[in-house]
Length: 72
Image (cartoon, rainbow, N blue to C red; front, side):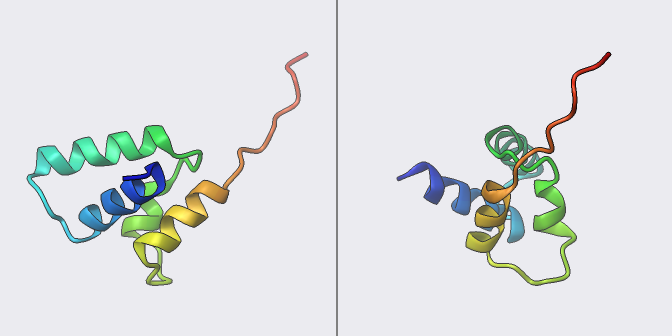
């Protein structure tokens, strides 16, 4: 399974609460580590747009961190 499909599967399982609480916590932690989007859990649990797992992964992968200027 490709990494992209694996991420979609994790999101689907999280959205459907498929697994024990510990398994879901572990999936979310791994997902947060794999994605550049820091607020991936907000897309999964709190977004009002009713996104599919595929759309959530696409949006999270498209996110780019905002570069900050160097400290003086």
